[in-house]
Image (cartoon, each protein chain N blue to C red):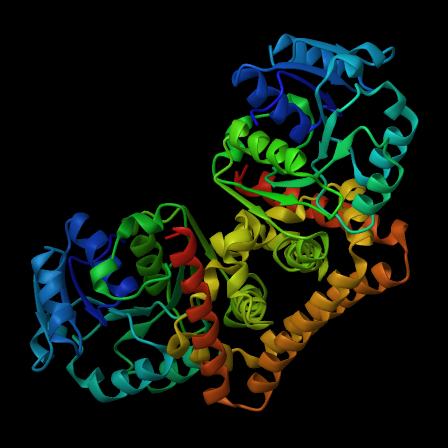
Length: 287
Length: 287
């Protein structure tokens, strides 16, 4: 299946806007719905949507063969409950949310039977938000994860696959909602929890002039959007708490070796971490 | 004072080699001592030293007005005790070690009274080692910290300052050994302890294909040299343990907010970390 021609994006934030840009460039007719008039105006001015609406958006939905829900998790389900009546029969829907558990089941539970929602997660982002910063170039090195359930059809799967291909994602993979959320708890949420906790550990802003690349790399993601990330953390609480506990135990083990003067153990930990990290380089082409 | 013409580098590793390259380019006559014949041969072949020796290096020391000790902390003190007899009268010495407490006092305690040792720390490095990877370009964006004690003279201070200027460091600052080690425990050692512990938390190498920039940024420094870093960690044990404890308490606070469903507290933590990290951007020109 090739990606449908007419696509409506609901929520023109950084990701929704970047989808709009990429899909318009790929030759699709992209429309958009957002609560901010300025977001619509900006997207129109940048030429990344053909049409947009803040109110009276039902006609845009009625024309769309596919709908990208670029909303935060809680807002997404509420918006869809209220507005699914306007969807075109047979519409294909997907989202951009960073946590899937709960949300996917909820949506697939209440969605009109003639429409199909297939969850997906573009693992891309920046430390800024809003369509003003939209840039589809961020997808070129990123992962796109399709998160199907037993309710999804081959047609829905093909839609998600062709969407990722049209946007130029580097890797496209599939995970179940449970696998996805466990993975994301480690590689994304735990790293953000660490960066935030490192910045909050003490008031060390006076040390800014001494920080090197390693500190800057570790804390760049501490510039976090509190509304989005508090939703994501709570939506994946059990996985994240388990990952924090495992990480804290690992750090405690290093501290124990240090206090006990156990040089052999400290070196073993360093060798193990270096070997694992080098494997990551090999698998992904990082230097 | 301008930097002396004849400079001998003891220990041609990544840093010693990069000093050799930078000083030769700046017009100095640079010689080198190393236990590895291949390191000397490599430096000669690359044209970054004028002369080098593995054994019978006393004549090189006798000619040198300044000596850069590019050795690991433990090896440094031992080497200097044994070979200070060959130093030129009035010789100026410095090091490149990442921890200063203990070491500086020890060296200044046994050093010949006609020579002067002034500690300094070039905050630069890479995940590779050896003169083969030497590249003085790494200093252009880095901090150089001069770490004087009450035993140092204006002549010694001027030497360290002119050395950093000749190598093109971006920022040159001064800290006491105690201030230096406390700072380094947070901005460098704690970050390495975190990266190592994150890689060691579980065997997550199968997740490599899902990692994004944030995980890669956080763990790049987990590719750690176990011999150097175990020395550095033990040399700064008390500071590092205190930093680990503060960080662990900060992470525990985040976890508590998560478990307790305290959205207001979680948002407060995110806002605080984002504000602090933005201050770092402003102070240092990072985006």
